[in-house]
Length: 532
Image (cartoon, rainbow, N blue to C red; front, side):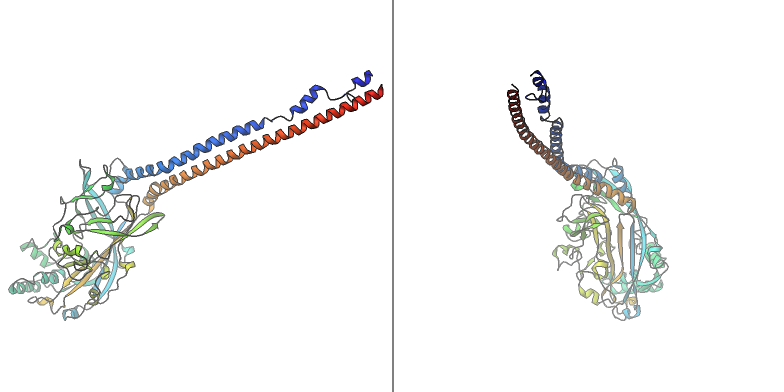
């Protein structure tokens, strides 16, 4: 009896300690507590990250705009942007195309001029600002000097190439003298003959561009100093080289970024006096190099051109991309050189002829000169009917400016203009023969510049790439925050399922243990009774 009662294999149940250990093995494991903390930590981190990303959505654009404002102000303390404004690092080129006259003798007999385009003759253009003076009213004054150097590897020939063009000294002066008394015209014609000046010039490209020796010019400068504007040799671009474009005073944008680069005055003038209406005489926009930032598709591109003696306003055409930089393309409106009949606001530029040419005689010493687009693009078709050899093309002859709208900085520029001369037969001046009245093209030129190299890299990194990264970061933070919150919720749900499963398993195990314990007791009791 004692043997049976003391034998564990016969007792009714396991020792208490052993039973307690087996039940304890069904309680919650320690790693579930760590899982709960992880879910809580991920949830908090996710919320903070998403909130930070949401804040960036609103704060990011403000930070970007502040950076842009800082970089486009004319401020010596901002060395990078100030240096770019002062000494333009973008390579500018001027490409010149001459209209070589093929039939000068026939023109004198009244036939239509026949021309052949020669060029381009390309010049590297260097621009530097001097006499920079800052004023208390947040403006800065300067003179910008230009220099031109012939660029043979981009040209079709040398400056020694010979072309034939109208002689402005003779044919231009003849039109200017048309209303003078007859004997005066006779004297003028005699003077031309004395100095062997004919109606057409055959000169080298270099001479026509930068000047040639003329005894007539020397005579006029000596006895009629107010008649000749040039100091040295007479050339079509003699006034351009080693000269400045006048005293510009522009706003720095320090107090109002919307006014940055806009012209306050030119040569001390708020408006010019060349034209016949206040609207046409107004000096609008910038100096033509940069514009205020934050442009929209409704923004126009006004600028004042001393060479054209007027303000011009380009209009938005389309968006695009240049070297990875988003741009707006601006082009000249069809009405830029329209006459007053076709476009009433241009009436102040008259007296006008056909649409498509602008009379600039009032700012070119009364010479009968006209500006237009190359090959009379967008001009009255009659202009091309009277001159043979012209073929306008929007792609080749249209002017445009590609500008980064966020900063107002041009990244690709091509300004194209044509110089024309009105010629006709003038009684008493025999050099004019029987020339039929015609506006004959002399040359057209394209001033172009394109951001490239280290300038492009700096511009792209600071004003395109970094803002784009900041914009992407805000959405990355929001997405990451939401992902962390989702993982946290998943862990929490997983933990809840584990707890439910553990509770069910524990109950089942306890029931099984209870049944086993009861069954064991019954068996033990039967054995004990059988023994007795």
